[in-house]
Image 1 (cartoon, protein in one colour):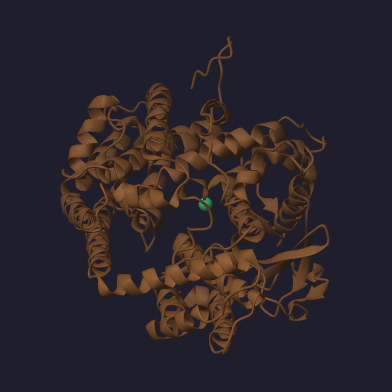
Image 2 (image 1 turned 120 degrees about the horizontal axis):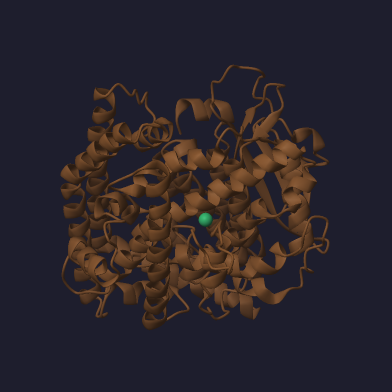
Length: 596
Ligand SMILES: [Zn+2]
């Protein structure tokens, strides 16, 4: 964690990891495990893995995840503890079927982990990614230098963010065009080493797949999936085709509106500015948003959220119950952005006053998960959130509910194993759609002006999704393709995609290289199509809820459309694409055809 984040939050994530580890050590030191304790060990591993995934996914706000990762390694991946735990599990036969299944899963997972320590491949892959990341950092540095040369100070901010902001404020097309051109040229000149490193990792992975006797790397990844290679490939191709079509329309609109010649998508922020126009985008009261989250969770999933007292200032704790049964705990990490603003108020816990119970009253291990909640103070000194922050809070809370309601917890090193790999973004993508629901304005009792402002926020957010959609689809297609092939590098596969899907310069390999190193790509090569799958599933499953207007009740929580989110053994049905492209299309012509 950065010093600031650490001081502001007193490192609640590290503390949660230690608390989880303490119980884990107690159980691992037993002479024999009962059924419930076997299940508890799997849950503790899952809780710890969730913390890892959470920190990894929120590095931008929480600081580098490496310190937590090394604590996790020490506490949850210590070889000696593994050996002792293996012996303990061997001798602890369970009486109930479910517990026995968990015991066997733990045994095979720990066995696999021990074997992987003996093969050099994992260390080589990790080292390869580290070098690829270093090469990517060099691209960042070169771009930062470019910005400095033209008088744009980065002051430690990500160069890409500074660039996008600058693009958004440059009204003069020719100046903007020059900046975009220079930016892309710097990237093109510096991306080579990143791709070389990624190709090297690819070579190691293919070698490992051959040694293991599998046809391809993807075949190994799809062991974690409920779809076969052909079903996944058909879905990715269909998505990519639609994404090319939609992005081409958006690019035309950007060209027409703000005058962009090359790289129209790099001018997106200038276009978004025209969508906002003279409006001031509203912020929303933090407590009202948390209450909204609570209400929609109750009505759509039948889960009651009860605030708990926390001993940490910047944490909002809730207990989840379903039909009176306690199902989990969630901690909202309240992070003030910018951390050192005008200093209107101290960063004391803004919402904890509502707490009605104490976490010390909970003596059993529960599914525990965290949500990042970025807030700021408005001019009246009230804690508020932006639309983007609310959107990501709802998305992350979807992951929390997923963790809470899973039928069983699989042990994991990554926090990405709770469902077949293609479904891990399904519920979070569904949940985030509540940010677009008409009930939000009603619930927050927004003024007419703020309701209009919220409408603009949702349009911009949808357009943002659209502007990144082709990159997302190309990353998924590339990731899948290279890990299916036995030879050829990323550039070869990219050229094939360019030709077969007529990308027409709308996506460049250099601009997606960084995404090929996401935690999901690193853990499960070939699986990044899960983001497309989740997006499509979320839009399709949310459509019936979206049709309930302001004041209308959502369908009863017994609706079966979300069952596949909670049952790891359920099959994966390919989601439809129409609801997704309809949801994110902000304009239609008179015939109802999408025109943007
Ligand atoms: Zn997610």
